[in-house]
Length: 112
Length: 398
Image 1 (cartoon, chains in turn yellow, blue):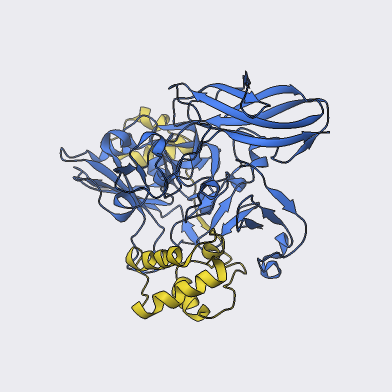
Image 2 (cartoon, rainbow over the protein chains, first blue to last red):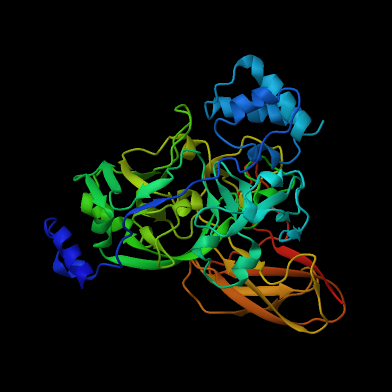
């Protein structure tokens, strides 16, 4: 009943017929919900040559789990992924860092 | 393909740095049947422990066993998938607004109370990620490496999008309706996540702006306080934390429509690996699928009668038939369909099997009311969308 009255009051100015208000559904959620996300939840890149560049440019937008859960990819495939991250998603990866990052990802998470 | 295999190992660690994970999940690792398939079980806020694909942005998969518990997927077990790491960790439903702008006669800014005062409907519908089962593609493809748990079924309560659009009044030039939520990119150069529907789809009877999920406010990670529901269509359109509805006078050319989430415009979105030059269209309706939910691949059963159970669903025509096989698809017999919660819902089924000693390959195949069914041979496309091969399960009866 309270709900119906509130709805009718809110919508009265909008010119909605009383019948519509009566047909209204259950109350909407109210108030703030706050959560605390766990960040990278303990995931981090494996050590290896080039890991600093991978940390600098890959971890800006996503955790290392995006990399470590991929199938074993070749250097050509990893190069395509790194290039896509720059071209499509705007990762600010300098030209001279593409190869070192792809090399690191291939050595740490890929296949030859 | 042994798609449902998920072995729960008890040893801590593997290559995941489990010592650094939240205590609640120490040592709980799921081994999906794929390369690099180790996943920890992690309880995110408002969620029970789910299969963690990536923590940032959060991507959580529902274990298949959850689908055996009931036709509706509990909110705390529902899968989670975000594209961009800029996710608000606090959202106030009281001050939240849905802005309706663009090619409309009367722009709106609706509070949730105003929304809930409009006529509401409740629809049972499956929400399935476009890339559900991507990890099971062969050859493998890059992308989120899901097994089969990036799906769920819920009762969604909300207001028809059509009623909202009519209140704003579509301009004669309206072509598509674009949806945006509170999720934002980390980098300003990254395309913001927006999705669009043609006006005739957006005005469909069953497209709703939902504020309840299984009768309760939805978890923040599922889009609190309000999300778009597009029954029968893949989850990419079900924009979470919906904040902006923009009516366009053109076909949306933003990255998430023009480049991403496109499928080959071929039968079953199937192309030969490595092929190029085929036309593409935005992904849309789901194809028909079915799963056994109470027997895992690799299971050992006792030599006694067993009731096989599972689920089936499609893109909105409804399920008319589910068949099971114990010889890998050589012979089939009908399963019994359980209660019908509507054409967009999971449909549970069961089939008694008098299991005798031996080795078996169980299989399940659904047929939808539109006549579509599941292929025995896997499809392939480079983005890993729309896999719906007949699922098989190797079991031993001993």
